[in-house]
Length: 254
Image 1: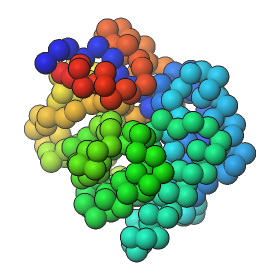
Image 2 (image 1 turned 180 degrees about the vertical axis):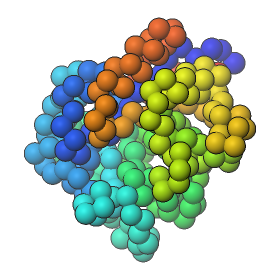
Image 3 (image 1 turned 90 degrees about the vertical axis):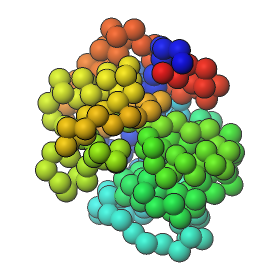
Image 4 (image 1 turned 120 degrees about the vertical axis):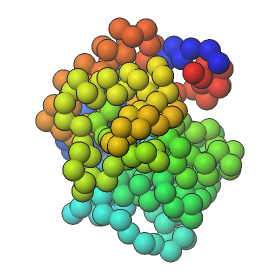
């Protein structure tokens, strides 16, 4: 395998955090809230315009219609209702800008990562709208597997500020140590995932992981400073920051 020389840096935007204009020049893919867990038509239009200004790939970020909990509370929906929920949000953003990818949000992302039935419904919704869309999914997850089996291009996603379990899953937010608050530790974790294809789990185990795209959360008070640091560190490590391209990625995996 050839050495990875490029990486996608994505961020969840259009969620009302107030940092979008500062974050957009630092990333290569924007996951834009589609009006369910956050956002509305006005914020979608404004965020799409920012992405176009900075040459950032546009993606839909569908979540549960649960603004009170910011889409982070798990729900059980009938398959047809879940498919419609996801598809309608993708369509809402596609009416405003040309989409490159789809990344589920919050609880929906986590459920699809571990539950094959939820994963298949999300994949079906994406296929229904446009089979050329790239699916952003937690690395090694059921969602990544379902997307690939259905013929979608899949970008396997890793996280800078989240710790991992030995099975490759993210540590639940409710658990101690789930969030990495030390910027140096977070940067070191990303560099190792990108360059070596491994991440250190909370039990000390080194876990193999594929890193096609790195998520930088846009809702924290230090989001801009961290994104700027990570952007600079990746470049210093010889990486070219570029939105995910399936064909290129297939020829340059680590």
